[in-house]
Image 1 (spheres, rainbow, N blue to C red):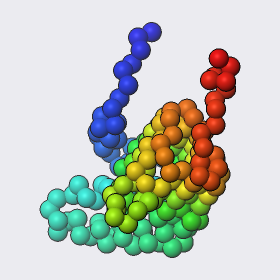
Image 2: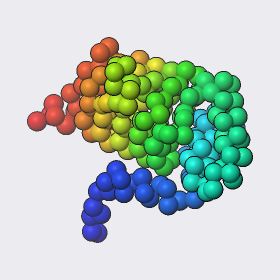
Image 3: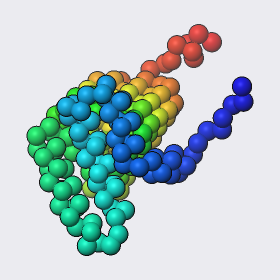
Length: 192
């Protein structure tokens, strides 16, 4: 078996945008247990609609879709408490497991197969750095109530404990817990 080279973040984003909106939503639906009634699935589907409508030209045709997107976005935000703007770079098969108090900064990047739970905040840390937002790698598992603040990066397969406040980068495969979050020593490194 030949090993496949790692894809860069730009290549992954291009791969996601090559999929049509129906394929993206179908993947999200499968990732959410084929249950269209889940608030997380609905939030992701509306976010995908927001991204798709920005590709429509001319702007006159986009206006109708923008009205639909804005009304659905506000409905999701106000009903389910999930603030997921269209400017978030959301990759494939992202699952928002529960609803309420989920706030995601518009400049966040969320990788493939990530899981986000209730009460999670992915936000800027300082007012004078408004564009610095968290970047999640692939398969990141974010526990309930976790706060990820500033321009931090979470490596592939990182786990964030419930109610952790993460202010610095988390390496791939690591677990961060506590306030402020500390990296737990992995089983592999403690065995050596």
